[in-house]
Amino acid sequence: MAELTVSSKNPAGAKVDALVVGTHTTSDGVAIVGGDLPRPVVAALEHLAPALGITGAADEVRKLPAGPELKADVLVLVGLGARRADGTFSAEALRRAAGAALRALAGTASVAVALPVEDEAELGAVAEGALLGAYAFARYRTDEAATSAASRLPATVEILAGSARSSAAKAAVERAKVVAAAVNATRDLVNAAPNDLFPAAFADVAKQAVKDSGAKGLKVTVLDDKALAAGGYGGLVGVGQGSARGPRLVKVAYAPSRPAAKVALVGKGITFDSGGISIKPAKGMEAMKSDMAGAAAVLQTVVAAARLGLPVAVTGWLCLAENMPSGTAQRPSDVITIRGGKTVEVLNTDAEGRLVMADGLVAAVEEKPDVVLDVATLTGAQMVALGNRVSAVMGADDVRAEVVAAADAAGEQFWPMPLPEELGASLKSKVADLANIGDRFGGMLVAGLFLQEFVGETPWAHLDIAGPAFNEGSAHGYTPVGGTGVAVRTLLGLVEGRAQR
Ligand code: BES
Ligand code: MN
Ligand code: ZN
Image (cartoon, rainbow, N blue to C red; front, side):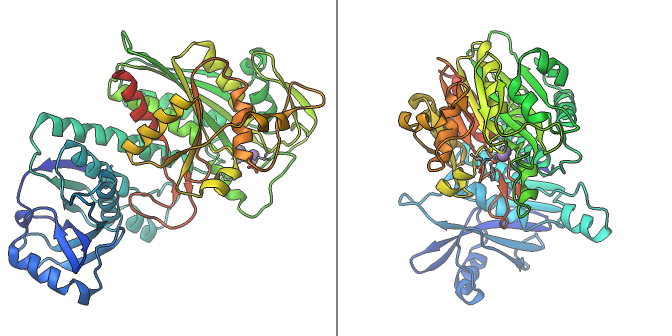
């Protein structure tokens, strides 16, 4: 990751390759904001903006020669959109602008960012946005041109802000570094090719991530296929049995001394979802390498909580399997037994996520956490309902509201969805306790109702991130193409909130 510092120096004097300032749309044109640039520079830019086609819209990035009044070589104008009624910008608008600017600055060694920052929270948002925008995935590139263009990320990013030296500012920036590292590591996992990232390899990544974090109180436990069979984890065994590379359940526990609360996180980790015997169409199947985004987010949230030393016990459960068709794969009509004893008739092997998550939820709930949250790229129906930018959250009303509030504060979009009891009837099986599919309409809610059967009385929410986890369109704000790292910021914010309850 880029080396990030904060200083209260004047932007005009910043000796960097590129200086980033904000633009925003006004009723009669464009205004420049962020740091006091010399008045004539501002006046000239604002005057010329229309002729240069600069509008101040979000995601607009323009590079100009900085001119003799500035010590920087290049001046980068990044759009913040319109100001709010009170004249300020939301933390998320700042985060996105910083991200868009840094995304456009691959190949630029030193960058200074001067955006209108009023408090520590906004400083943290700019720092986060910058580090999230300065992301590239070059693991598989070997050609010189590609590696240099894609991965020559800015080496240094200096944020210019008046309040730079306060201890609150320092803490906000330290937190931003941990958060961005967690989100970027989640992206790396999602982008990894499924021939490299299979369940056992993912388990190894979890162990390594814990080691590398240097954080105290972290412990990883791995159940392999034999242990899963012995432990009655019929969902993981059933889904994983079609693959030559067996399933794993990884427990990543962060246990501080005298925790204020105990949170369990369960993540869907299907390292590749071919659909199994109910095989998916070839078109678009490659995106199913991202079907482990929930597990990746859970792993990195636990590591981040530990790195921040939060006074909350957080246990992550990574439900890892590869869903493949083969002579050993489970069949439509197989009946499996989830841990804890409930039986499920597998009518569609492509509804595999709920099977591995059921095992994970039962395991999580056995340890009596105060709350359990599960995160999964669970249904195509999520994308039909909410698209690729907005995730869904279902579950107990209060936990669901807590997730929405944490997401709003973190700058992620989660929308509350219901779990209508009547829809649950469609999950009835002719032979077992439950079927793994029900009504097609409301398919996201049906999947949520299925999971609800496995959480008992524990306060619970289910996060369906199917669309937002993997960006198949173009990059925007601080969001790259491919793995996005969604849910990490929301989950971490929720855990922090639990420390204060
Ligand atoms: N992993 C998919 C859901 C998914 C689809 C995530 C597209 C991201 C993008 C999941 O395992 C799945 O296949 N769900 C089926 C369920 C159906 C068979 C009830 C679906 O949504 O079609
Ligand atoms: Mn599937
Ligand atoms: Zn899946």
